[in-house]
Structure formats: structure tokens, C-alpha cells
Amino acid sequence: MQEENIRKIATSADTEIKDVPTLNILICYLLYKIDRPVEPEQLYDIAIGTGVINFFYYQDSVSYLLSNGLISLSKGKNGAECYVLEPKGRECAKQLKSYAPKSYRDKLVLAALRYFTRLKYEQDVKIEYEPAGKGYYTHVRCLDVSADLMDLRLYAPDMTQAKLIGERIMLNPAGFYGKVVELALNNEEPPYDLSDN
Image (cartoon, rainbow, N blue to C red; front, side, top):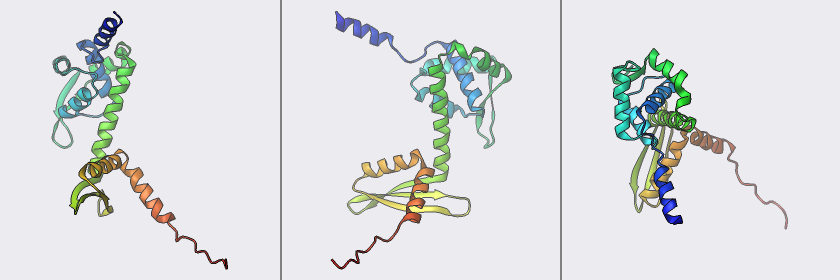
């Protein structure tokens, strides 16, 4: 009996929103909060990647938002097509946000911020994996306009560990670079024991 109740609760505890009007509000709210044009692929990755939005309902929501003038599709700075929040969509986000659960709103906005931060890091930091005898190098390059700020190879005994190093660096490349520079600047020669003992 108890096992059956647990199964019912687990079935009803679906975390995906399957209500198109709520998704409409969430997508408008997301575009409102990040305040930038978003390529269709990027919006899809953010929305579906959170596990909050179901693919089929996402498609229905985007179609509704486009056909009703809440968002539009236009050319971005790089020439790619982007979704842009229209004034009607902005009003929807501001006035109706309380109809979409705050936890979902926060999850989507946080996912978007992380997504665009990762894109920026991928432009500023290049990581490659190179075979090195019995292991691999994680080759890290921090790029600047005129020169590399850092070019570093870290040895790992296998590809799994090399990729783990790369993934950890990409969580906060600026912090990694800062720690390497700080370590280099604070590095000192070990003291010598000159006692007569």
C-alpha cells in the first residue's frame, strides 16, 4: 500500500511545465531578464536543458509568441537570426510573472546566465587535449586581442582526467588564471637550514 502511494506521488511530481500559457510567461520573462537577442538554438538549449520545459510544449509556446507579436525573429549583430522580446512580450513578463512559479523563473534565468558566461569563456579560453606518451596534456590557452595571456600544458594520466581538468578550468577560467599568476608571484625559494646542529 505504502509503495503504491509513493509511486503515485512520484508520478504526479513531474517537474516539467506542460502548460503553454505558463511557458509563454516564462519565455517572455527569460528574454526580459537577460535583455538581449537570443538565437533560436540558444533559447532552445537554455529552455530544454533546464528540464523545466518539455520540447513539444516549448515549440507550441514559441509559435504562439511569434504569431501573437510577443517576440519576433530578426537579424542579430553577427547576422544570425535572433528572438527579440517585443513591447507586448515585455508587458507580459512584467505583469504576469507571478503566474509562473518563481523557482522556474529563477532556474531559467540562472541557466541563461551560465549559458552565456560559458559562451564567453569559450571565446576567451581554448582547451585542447593532446596525447603525451601514456597520458594526455590538457592544453590551456587564455587569449587576448594581441597575444596569449597564458599558454599552459597540464599532464593527466588518461583522457578522462585530462577532460576533468579542462572542465574544471572552464567553470571559472579567470579565477584559474588569477590563481596561476598569484602562485607565480608569491612563489619563493625554500628557506635553507643554516644552523650549526
